[in-house]
Amino acid sequence: MNGFELKDWTLTISPEIWGLSPFKKILKKDKNRNKDIALKEMLFIYYYTDIKSNYLIISNLKDREEEIKKDIELPTNWKIDSVVQEAIEFYNNRSLTVIGKLYKNALKAANDISEYLTRTDVLLTERDERGKPVNDIAKITGAITKVKGIMQDLKAAEKEVIKEQEELEGRMKGSKTMGLYESGIDFE
Image 1 (cartoon, rainbow, N blue to C red):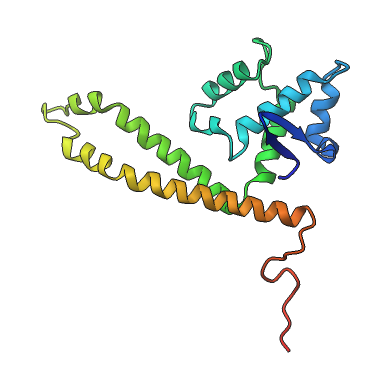
Image 2: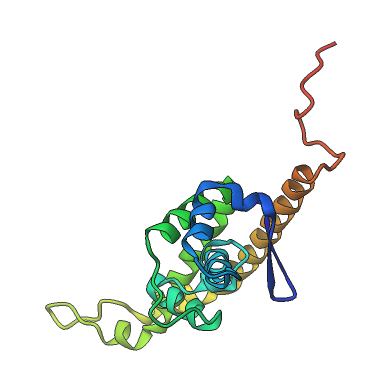
């Protein structure tokens, strides 16, 4: 979804975004004249959901919520309410392409692998009912040897996602370049 741009740590929101129902509700909900809370909630949605957000590495959603809330200085008693939740789901559904979805899921899988590797002390001491190790060191070292490939693949995937987003933004902003089949197929 275009309309959100983070530049120099400032979120710029295109005026047409406020016309979309879930975001309009956020704006109406904030009764303050300067709409500070509405803008912070939009920033929260961006950091919480957007594929370019550095906060996506926090896999526990409650931890992610608290970290973002603290960093953008939302009130300590602020919670994701039904209006913000609707906007998060709307943004998620409208901003993710197939490539973006694959990348987001790959990030989650890489996070899970990282969590697995942080528990090696527990994994190595875990025993079955006969006292034999459940996990042997070969499994763990085998996982470690694959980390470099995972990192390289994630970097390549990230570049593809960024490339796709730039292409989509160009098309959405009136770019003269068109994708394959956008102008139709001429069989003659």
